[in-house]
Amino acid sequence: MRRHQTALRIALLIPLPVGLSAQQQPADLIITNARIYTVDDRRPFGDAMVITAGRVRFVGSDRGALAMRGPRTRVIDLDGRTVIPGMVDAHAHLLGLGMALRTVDLRGTRSYDEVIARVSARARGVPAGTWIIGRGWDQNDWGDTRFPSHEALSRAVPDHPVYLTRVDGHAALVNARAMTAANLTATATDPEGGRIERLSGGAPSGVLVDRAMGLVQRAIPPAPREEVRAAVLAAVKEANRWGLTGIHDAGVGRSTIDVYEELAREGRYDLRNYVMISSDDATLDHYLKRGPQSALHDGRVWIRSIKISADGALGSRGAALLEPYSDSPEHSGLITTPRERIEQVAVRALRSGFQLNVHAIGDRANRTVLDAFEAALGAVPTADHRFRVEHAQILHYADIPRFAELDVIPSMQASHQTSDMYWAGNRLGPTRLLGAYAWRALLETGVIIPNGSDFPVEQVNPLISFHASVSRQDENNWPTGGWFAEQRMTRDEALRSMTLWPAIAAFQEAELGSLAPGKLADFVVLDQDIMSVAPERILATRVLATYLAGRPVYERSATPAATRAEVGAP
Image (cartoon, rainbow, N blue to C red; front, side, top):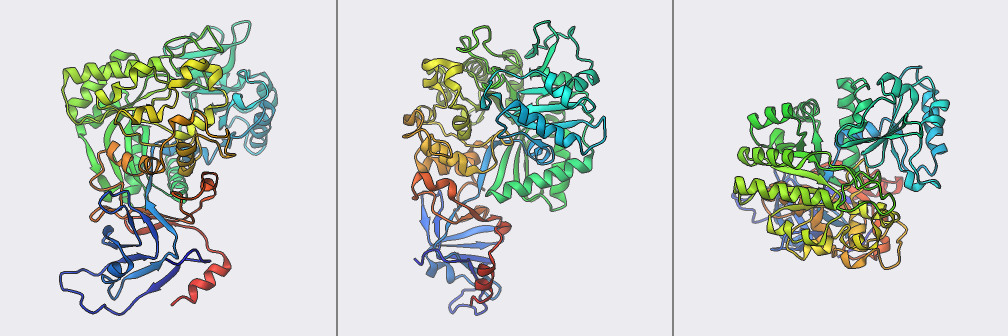
């Protein structure tokens, strides 16, 4: 096999091969001279792939593939590049990403002063009174890791209401103008499942945790529909750029789903979205009455699952723990949805043919969810329900085997481990860390683990989670040997966790997840082999092209030299 050269060589081959039978429909696209990882046990590897009518027709040798070329077949010689199935983020927030691309980006800030500087810069460019929205701050990355208070922000930006979501989406920082707009004062009480952080005199500090975020969030004017459409399209384009052909979209309201379907009907939605609907009663009543919907609008939208949040996040001490936080003994986290409600929705889901996916991070929340699932399955016995726990980050050792026993899927995000490992020990202490991000312990029980990023909580690039899965190390390959390295995945497991296992977790395995004949031709071309390069080189991998149903939805811009090489190719 010829190795990497300066460009992909593309040729339109006109001659019809001798011996083409009448029963053989000529291929639309043939990929040759590649290293193809199919994630199909019947044919794990191939050098070539044939695509007809948007589906994989053949994977095997160059000789076998070229026997199917016809007068209009496009043939791409990949010069030894790597092909994998289209990657799927099994827990993401598409509109959240789209809006984050249009708001103040606070990721990577190393101090509260830096947050204020970025917000102040935005305020100078918009009229007074305009809401300023931002996302991505994380006090654990600052010199002072305590929650901030609003005073400095309020002094710097007095004329604009400001709402800044923490990186995990489970806390917000607001200024005085925003609290005034929302009529949030010292007399406000904590909502169930939420906490208002307070100053010494009892006044709100400006930080709102979990359900308390809604006290100010409800005062923010909704984005106009055209802005939502634009944000969704921008997010889809960004996902494609990183090799994503699909996502599982966690907790989506009806108005946003309407936009997804509208764009898909227009042929502008280049992503397969497995939507988890929000669990408020009005949304549930609407979609459960409509019934499970699969592969709508040319296989772009699925509406057959429900999302509930059982607790908050570890970084904001909202994750519900069985014992108090090691670094904050007065807190043990927040249950944001009672067990009774989870069980009630689970029963409705089972009776309606819907899947239920519940966010649970702390060990108490995970136990609560598993208990609710067990009770619901006792009331409505169902063999193939594929209920999921989203995140499943901190597990008591006694609950690890219950996932397999109940046929529950732990849907986890490997990049959360590499983001949280610096301070998770402070929150949990040494003993509970043994059940943190316990991929190997879960896999050994026989379950699958669909992988994701939870973007925009983490970066979109799915190879960050691939690298974390196999190394338990950050982008600087720290710590040496990996953090609790015994919990690592193999590379084959890591690849499956972002291809076939998300498909199984979404009832899509007959159509997606592997490059097997008959399945949809969703695939990605990479510039190096992530299955064999040294672990420290994985994150240097670049996506060269992303294909959806055999059609490119992203192609990396060629250099001038590469462009000339393509023009001169036979």
